[in-house]
Image (cartoon, rainbow, N blue to C red; front, side, top):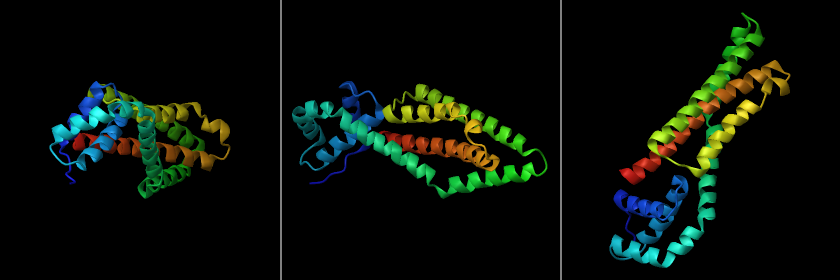
Length: 202
């Protein structure tokens, strides 16, 4: 008989897995979902079902850490893909791009390129360090998301767009899109984190 678990029961599974050594939140959440699905289809009380399930499956569950990490990675990449395809992101990026071009009619277009480059550095740095500050105070420890954000941030710094892109219009759009992308990516990650919190701490 299917019986949906309560947030308290989900948190019990999550805390058990943490004590068992699953330290990354995203991997642990995927494991918790897996265990919860199995228990929801078992007859009887949660406590008895959970104890019985872990008795027979704990070893295999903890050994399959890599498979659950893959699930977490696919979810993070799904967020990245969804973020890039958001119409609002493109609308704002194009608006910023158009504004830079229009303002360039009244001043040197090269100055607008420099302005956007500096803006990108400031926006990405502020968001990146806020991300890690929030991670520390909230004690969130994501295996995939942490690496993804770090890779994108340092990638944007190492990638010297002005040396590789000769066309000023293309360079302006690159900076406009990158600034908007960082803002939308962080918003998406915070939404994901909020979803986890609501599910396990409702």
